Image (cartoon, rainbow, N blue to C red):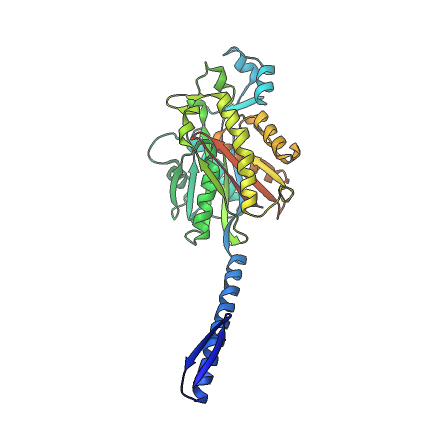
Length: 356
């Protein structure tokens, strides 16, 4: 006897002996396959809905006491306040004297932890983004671990200059989403004043010192996909051996071209629209760059918070310092979506979606 079986629009002719039990078994087999497929689809959807991601639950920052304004700089190099403001938007910057990269990182980290109520010993990981460590070894993250007593945390530094905090954030997300960590302390800490040639007016007017931190803790939520890029062929536009050297025009053109592109790319990748974004939190390099990005994206400048007028360019610390200010001032509300974007030496650039 031949049994005709239709499954997934395919017809199969199966020889078998006439038996009620055999027919019943075949019916169960094909029904079971359909049920299994349905359950697998449901499981996939549920995994996406219930995925563990890293949510920012606390922020902190540390700013050196000493302030150097544009008038102070005019006594050191051939420049003046109006010239600096017009070209950069920077009005002052903070310069570390007694503070170090480690001490600022420690203070910012402690503030972030205090806001969450999480104890240092509960941390699984500490990642510090810095291009200006106090020493090559031990790494800054291990020095932070020692200072705050986070004995159970694995620690390492990440060096990607002004894009560093974005890459560190993506790294933390990857560890949390893979269930390797639940609680991560991220810090961007820079003492760039040690790397500035104070006779070069093209660079000394831009940079300042400081640190910012954020605590990420595992929670259910949507996992947004980041976008990251690097182009080592153009790395000579921004270098640092003993001092920072920069081709200002090349870096400006790079930033105003690549940043709008990567923001559009990350939104498309996550099926979001410009109108879905509450704030665009960019690396605080130059007011003209931020304004140019807003114009190219056809977004109101009010959606681009800035604090570079107070701190200058603090490299990998700029985004977490700005996030901390926004958080503590009450600007950030639960459920708001931010695009955070960094760009700088490498050349490297990237953007991520942060849901508050």
